[in-house]
Image 1 (tube, rainbow, N blue to C red):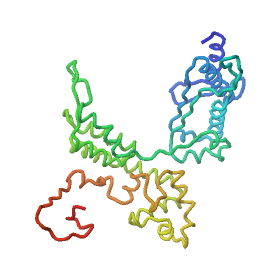
Image 2: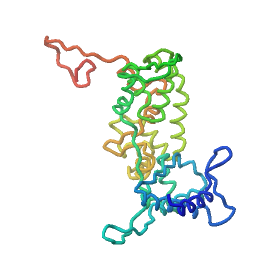
Image 3: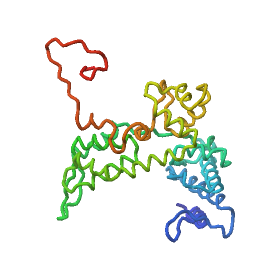
Length: 338
């Protein structure tokens, strides 16, 4: 970095302090000079300009962004990030042609699905125009299984307290149990795995250890899902509760609306739309379905006291079909191979 730019960035960093006595958060020095959000924008532009010259990119990641509860601070932060990401500078292309180009700055804000709505027009920032919103779906069971499979095949290396290394492995049944209880929810996946790890002392994590660990984690898992429901406005919570009371094949907008006391399905349409696009809890298909499977399990089963599909996972059903003639079976008969 050239000395002149180094001094400019150092001066700007002095204006935007990131050091605090106990590491609580970001402190902006208001003692002198421009407003903090102006200094932050100038700093990002300066760093982005240097990134152009160095042929690198700048990644800005702010996690748990919904915890910025001060409206003014959040609005100013979003404006800073948006201005920096949209800023253009003039560069010289091959052949001496001067062109305008954006700064190589990528901004990721991660947090609760309803943050996008919270950060829209209510905060005075052009959030929707400058930031693309992606609502992540629960992780697929096959992906979770693939993530844990190295525990089965290779094991996880740990110190053996004798100066060497040992390997902690996991049975396939234990993998299936973790996948079952977490319902595709990343936090619950981490919680189930952590409790399973500490539930035993041997070199192989068993299905019994997964269940013992999960038994100790039930209250935390319940609180996690309850917090999701408690954040919902009354009408939206009523919608998901009435939807959960219906059989899966009956979960249409008309049926749910009638269960809520409406005459027409369209009266519950805006509520359904918010639960889909803003909250990320349901899918408005035909019929409607739960996207957040932990919420569905909490409302429709004994989860977390009993995992969804536990009988399938821990006591697999085995169908024996003989070559002898057998009576004709109706679809849905529990003895039918179909």
